[in-house]
Length: 425
Image (cartoon, rainbow, N blue to C red; front, side, top):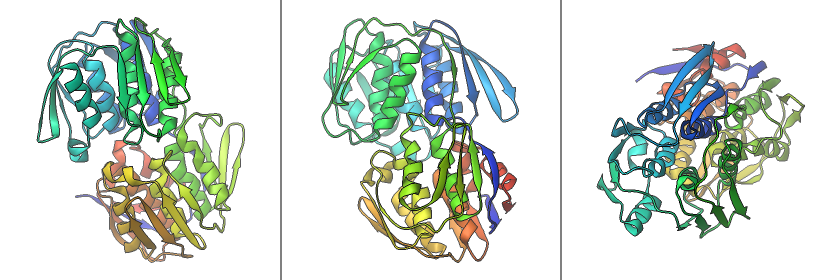
């Protein structure tokens, strides 16, 4: 177990926000399904993105890497007819890799086994199991956990999917169904949460020549017989990651975030609105966003459309005046960790006042926290949130398992130091 010690310091400066992990997954998959050469620009090789790249190679997709410092471009030679050359796919700890590629592997009739690590092994796949049973697709797992072996072919038609479990199931189907001969329809049987992630899928599909008709997020009509078109695509900056630096600016000094699309479809762009509601000093410009030291106030925040922001919102709330209620967060219990329990437990170790409920948190803010020893729960977003919390601690913060950040943001602590952080491994 590796640990990192952070001496409390106010962060200040400019950071280039890494490319969106969510969009990177989608662009790589679409390029892989396009018959020809696509260029996907602005990629970082986090563990999750590496999992998706290694997975598409299993279908005969080839790619070349052009690296420039932290950032790389990919030349991807895709295939519209999948040719399974490896029948075991290691998804590491990436839920997107697993749930996006299961429907895609069912475009051909070969047997495929999906493996994983950490919490991914037990994250639910019931939506797909129901489809398998209805369509006669053979599958086996280990007491409901990975490894999962599937064999069969996906059929066009009607798909009924709950909207309050994970939008990843919907996105996975949206990638595969256009390539079937017949038309299909996805009917969302409950309120659709994480709608922004479905928007990202539809947007990237469109850029690669695939059309889906969206009927107010209640139904999606997918015409069969479509083809992905090779495309040059640049991935925009990640609001999920920018959120940590924006809160760092609010708690510290001025932090400027570059590389963000101010008109982005990313659901986590709402972090700007949330900081505004909490009276934070945040300003949006044409090509950057700044956040300055502020005395923030508690608020009631519904995270059903932005669950990944919860750890950093909780951190800001713990250092804001008054009380914050975070609601509609139950799905966070089946992420890389039980994020409600994880962030409540670890912030409280630092001296915060966080109460955990079944589907949310009640946080009574304080001006400063004590500091101390905490653990990331092997969750990248918990590790980053605790690092940001150190800014307003009186004593150093030691984070066990800090390397969890490699899952999405391998250069996080390099950027933390660049902004003035004092860090010792």
